[in-house]
Image (cartoon, rainbow, N blue to C red; front, side):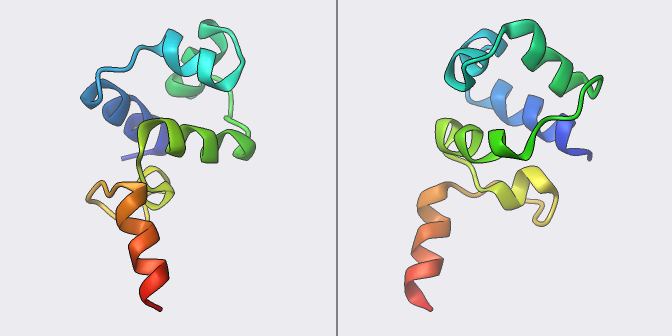
Length: 81
């Protein structure tokens, strides 16, 4: 699954609209839709705000892990080490 698919899937699972995501990023809904569709490449600077808004690990969006984890889970792992 490509990052665009993961973005859409996790956003849908959390019942967040494209308009809400766009507002959180300070962009227009049409621009966010282009990122999800893969028409435009999303700037990496949007990754952190997306992860914070959706409470999801960047590792999941990037395809490094296949099971969605919350940021809380990720922060606990960092504190253990």
